[in-house]
Amino acid sequence: MPEGDTVYLTGKRLNAALAGHRLLRGELRHPSLVEHDLAGRTVLAVRTVGKHLLTQLDDGNTLHSHLRMDGSWHLYRPGDRWREPTHAARVVLATAERVAVGFRLHDLKLVPTAHEHRLVEHLGPDLLDPGWSPEHAAEGLRRLLAQPDTPVGLALLDQRVVAGVGNLYRCEVCFLLGVSPWAPVSALAEPARAIDLSRELLLRNADRPQQSTTGELARGRQTWVYGRGGQPCRRCGTRVIRAEQGEDIYARVVYFCPRCQPAQRTALS
Image (cartoon, rainbow, N blue to C red):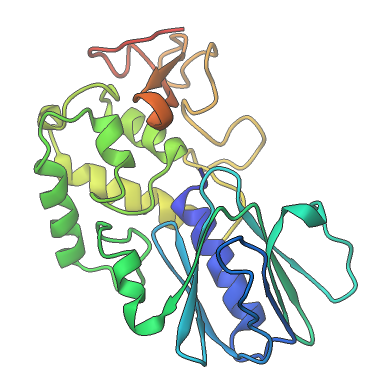
């Protein structure tokens, strides 16, 4: 599932391409929305809340999309060849100068803009909210501390705590905090640091497609532990462990250093 910074950058690019322009094509190829044609509408803005994209239209409606595991939005010039197969397109929004195509968007809704808040009101504070304030940080901390027995690695992924952290940042934040993903929230020496660090890393990468938590962009140097199972820890040289955390459809691969992040763990490989 894309990280919050990826969704934020997608929304920023869509807004730059579409906002203020009239749609010449507005095809919704999702089974529940095929009867709707958005041609003739003007895009007012595209904004993001956590991992949710909200495309606001001048007819008082908002097109909501979520990338889930494999969705993506692409931007083209009219006449360009699409980089994904046509049958995977779920949305086509075209102006005179740009064509935005949403591929494999399983979650699509068209709702009144006045009600769009209902789609995101369950989320915690958005870590990339331009209006982020000490009050946002305090609310994120309150939500984090409200589940003291939850493993840190799972709490960070819970979008109801703070919105925007995905698997990459979950692994990297745990490493930088020196805590195992399986340690309970109550074990955090500085729980506020988990919120601050999550926002710091997302902000660092919000305006570029490359993601780095180490400060380096060279291939193979961007992360501390994520994607580095079996390789030596960059700090202590111990072999980085690849394991699985979560159950059923919520299970995700997690990476950690057993020496830098000592604590209970399961499903080692």
